[in-house]
Structures are given as structure tokens and as C-alpha cells.
Length: 397
Image (cartoon, rainbow, N blue to C red; front, side, top):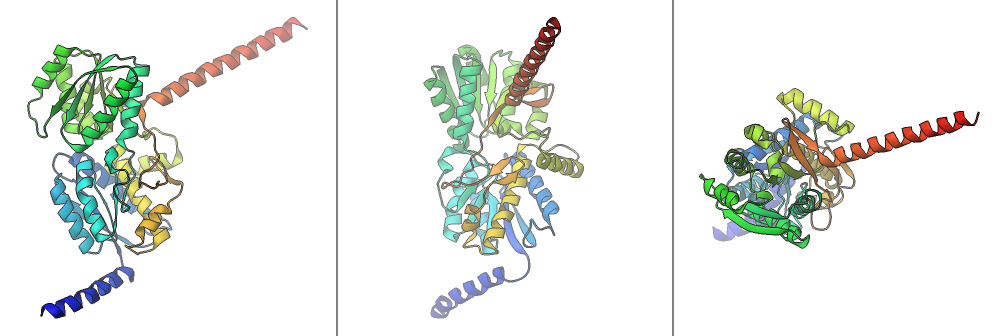
């Protein structure tokens, strides 16, 4: 009996793979936190994927008919690992997953064992760079986010002393390490790093410590629910310093929950804004708003791009699960709504974050504002030059 099973399994595997290569739908896994602490990201990513599937179905962009296998990790990395394995076993030739860095770190070994690609829509821990030849992500590393915010805090805002509030988990550690090291390198002082464990219900002790230390600013590295809680608590306790945080704060649900407390908070994210006049972005925002009755956030946009990047790779690799990485490597200058995509040798994308802030409930891109201000100055200078030329011309007649 055991001998028969040993001889039959390879044949069954060949037949199963042959079935995947034949006609019919191509299966793509979507293993995401649709409930639990990280659901604010997983649900937005899901909406983006669903819209992308709807808009590309039966078009030249989709080389095959796609069936998405939706799985809810419940924000549990161990469950994410098991669900990814089951999804590959069900015939998914590739999977979108690892929405958080903790889930991505747990899922990568499963992708390696299966020899299949895992594409993360939003994991950003620096240690994920080059972790596996099967792992790719459409979201930039925290190395760029942390560096950008430290530069902004020290050079633009001219903050001297900051306190770091960080959740004890992989994503927050990556973000706060990069920020702290760069801020110190620029001559700033990190007065204290205050760590708190997951599921901390009472944050008042952290806020009281911040008030005692009285820094110029506070950098918060955590996920949306903790950031919102800390921002609200700091505001309620009349902390008057500058609040800085990460792209985790930019989810639509987090900003709505924070309400007035979000005013003036600075955060980093890639250059996606619903108000962008890029035709690709305008078409996405219009379709998303019509479908869901509210504007997309950063995570919905990355879910949308992740699905379309997989289609682009599929056009290169076909239905082959084992050769899908070649299709990913073949993605060149792909025009997404969150930027142009091309993967480096570590599976990362070269996308550079900007600093944003909240004013009267709206997100503002500070770099674009500065560009607009400079353009206005240039315009006025040109007008003055033209007026001087007219005066000179009139004086000489």
C-alpha cells in the first residue's frame, strides 16, 4: 500500500499541474486579514482587487479568466501560513498576501516550499527585502518611509527632541529603527523609545510619559487602531508637540475614526492621492467611488495595482506556476495608480514616499504644495519681468 502511494503521488501531482495548465479559469489566491486588528487594511485591499478584477475581465489586460480564492487570515500570521498552503494546494498559481509584515514573514517559507510566488500589497518591513526569490511587494520598504520622515522632522520642521512610541511587532520595529537612526544621524535627540505590546488596551501611561518628557515631537510606529488611539489620547491630554507617523494612518477608516484629532498629523505614504490629475488615477478613483460610494485610500489603490501587476506577469509567464517569477521579473515600467512598477533583484519596487498632512479632514501632499508654491513664485517673477520689459519699451518710444 505504502509503495503504491509513493509511486502514485508524483503522477497525481503531474496530473494536477496539467489540469492547472489546461483550459478553464486560472486560480489566484487572496489571503488577507479581512477581520481582526488588520482588517482596516485587508478590507480596503480586497475592494481594490475586486474592482481591478471587474475592470479587467474580458479585456486584453487579462490574458485568462481568473478565479480569486478569498481567504481570511483573521489578522493571525499562523493562520495566514496555513491558509496560503491550502490555497496553493487548491491550485492557485500565485497569491496576493502578506498584508502585514508579520503575516508576510510567516507566509514566505510556505511560498518557498511550494515554489510559487507570493505578492504582498502592503508589507513594508525592511528585512523583507531579498528574503526570498518567490516574494515580491508593490509597497515600498519602511527604510524609505522612516528616512523620509526623519529628514522632514529634523530638516523641515527643525525638531530637536522626539519620543518614539512603537508597538512590539516586526512592522513597527522596522519603521522606528530607521526613523530613530536617521534622526540621530542628523543631529536630533531621541529622548526615549516607549514600546508597548500588541492589544494594549490602556495607553494612558504612555501618554503621561510623553507629557513628562515634553519632546518637540512624537513619532508613532504602529498599526491604524493604535495610532488612532494614541493620537486621540495625546490630543485629549493637551500635548502640543508635533505628531508624526507612518502610512498605516492613511487608511480611510483610520482617518474617519480619528476625526478632528487627525488635524495637523504628519505621515508618509507613496504619492497616491484621489485628487491626482493623472488619467490612470482619475479613472480608478471614479470607478471606485461609483462602486463603493466613497474614495479609495492608499491600501485599496495598492490592492488594485497588485492584481493588475499579476495580470502583467501572467502575460509574460502564461499559466505556469513554477515559472511565474519570470513573469514578475518581466514587469517593466508598468503604469499603476500608485506609481510605475518594476521589481529589483530583491523583489522590491522603487517607489519613494512623500510627507502628507491632514487639514480640515482632507489629505494634503506637502511636496506638491511646495511645488505649486514655487511655480506661483516663478509665475510672478515672469509677470514682473514682462512688466519691466513693457516699461522699458514704453520709455524708449
